Length: 517
Image 1 (spheres, rainbow, N blue to C red):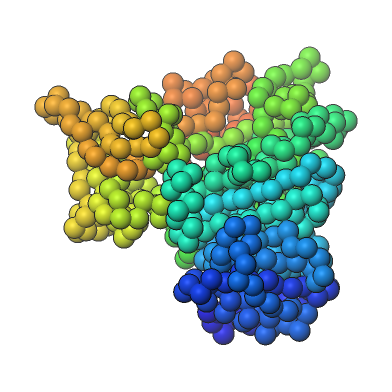
Image 2 (cartoon, one colour; image 1 turned 30 degrees about the vertical axis):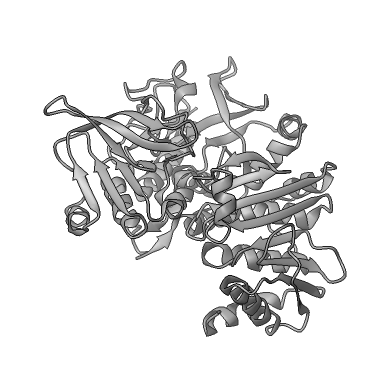
């Protein structure tokens, strides 16, 4: 199952095992079971510290399943399905952690995970094409490796279709705790710990309360925020980042082909490189911290209040809070969110295999989504509000060439239809004729642009009508000492490379402000 290159790379990683580990595979004679057993045996052949055994008994009611454990210990990490595709990295890390190789995760978070005393049985439903799923899988696997009260199971929805249908799972990753739904969508280790640790906010606030003011405090950890922090730190001034989610939207991006000098990369990989680069400098990186207010003090400092009640401050502040997917704001959208209404075609597309879906939006993201989905689903209907498509001509040509893609222009979505459990269709109005139409379908993928994450700033600095932070050519906002960069601002084009440049500009502007004041 593993090609020669993968075997060579995996073998090199497995040299880091510090103790023997065992793989137990629950088999049932199915083709997937045979694949999983073959994978386990190929892994064991790469290192003599790994042993393999099989059982015809189900593990936690499932087969095929691979259980991973330190030899002679009860397993706490399980893969139900074949952990390849995006989940291969999750498998490699689980092997290393069972072999006592230390994690690179923040030590404070690891200590929090170790201190949890409640029994926690995590299960996460994934699709192997989902680029957000590995973050959740790897987080719960690490928690299970660290704490004997915790177990973690990855469940491939493509293998265990009956479970997915029974639980009405229509968006991944879908995280369950002790048999009950806990969260949907991308979750970091900090996010999950915050969900299960009753004292998480109090602990986080306590860890931040005594920090001295930063020279430059960056709010946001996307490309703009990372770039700003690096440029500021290189000036030798005290720099900090508070970020709700390091990486921002880039974490949700699959293929990136317009990042100059890098012909192709993927969002999670770029985010990992950004974080590594930031950590090369003396930057205080405070993750899983959401800003809820910004205010100037009488002393001239700018305070940033966080959702956990903590307050951090800076002599200058750079706002790089980014943006999020725009919603349709029509009846039924929120009711059927994750029940047919989705925002990530790469993550959730496989759950609609052989079904009819719609894509809302005719820009690049919408037409790219339609092209990707066309290879999975029965039919794609693209609804574009305008009378023209905004996507690049090469994408439009490709979509129009596909026999199972239908593009409707001047279509205004008016309602999401459901049966109480899941989406069954949508209504739209033809803007040219005012006629109302109904489209029967199982899924709706919303791709209609971005909304800046600036609601908490409306009483602090000048915003445009669309909520974008107004900046000058130095990144300065309407308030002296507060700068901004990236997709949260009124720059005309929202691109990774532009955000990085804007972050650098804001950092240099902040440094100039500090010198002059």
